[in-house]
Image 1 (tube, rainbow, N blue to C red):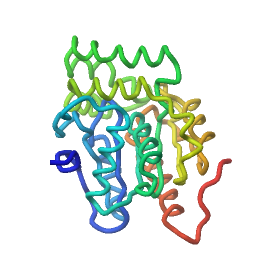
Image 2: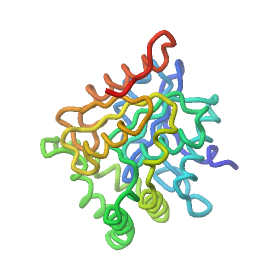
Image 3: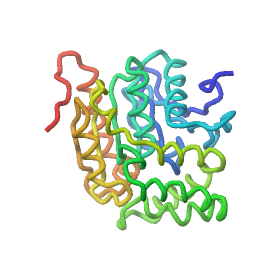
Image 4: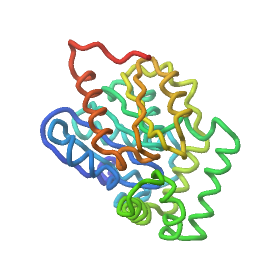
Length: 268
């Protein structure tokens, strides 16, 4: 059985181009509820639980970044052969690597609150790897209660914080989280960015304290065809904290990317 056949995918909408959503390292398909509900009016929206997360089974062996990217490629191929790809945080890193390894499968990119990878800095890489014994020691619930509130701004509602924590607690486990953390810790996509040909929208919450605007700007500046947008009043999970603003920007990007009479994004 292929990875795509085993991977859990939440889907909404039956018409329009495919939009594949890739979640962050502490999350699951549940984090894309605002996109599944709204964007499915115009697109076939699919959000995965990455291998080793949520309702997807553990992989047969260790997965590196290329393995996660190839698993995403299998999901796309199983649904028709090409997709717009939306990745949040770690999901954005996977999306970028997917665009490098399988350019014909990626019609466009939306990279939200992400970075070129933790391998750009030894301290960031060490901190990423240190999360694995933390999860092993605390367990998923306590781990989520410690880390989840940092992912949204100080102004986020108590309800949103609870949803973020509950989603993380239900999604993360070992060894899947360990594979994901290592894929981030060893990733430095800066040399790859100029080779990505898909038009991209790079978004970042203005109150993101996890990856932050500097990392997002590094992505936008390195990509060949990119627009960069700040999402006001949002932390690291801009797609959940400000879904209306986030979705509006995504729809604008997808309109440009799917309209052959409209110029692609350019850096500016």
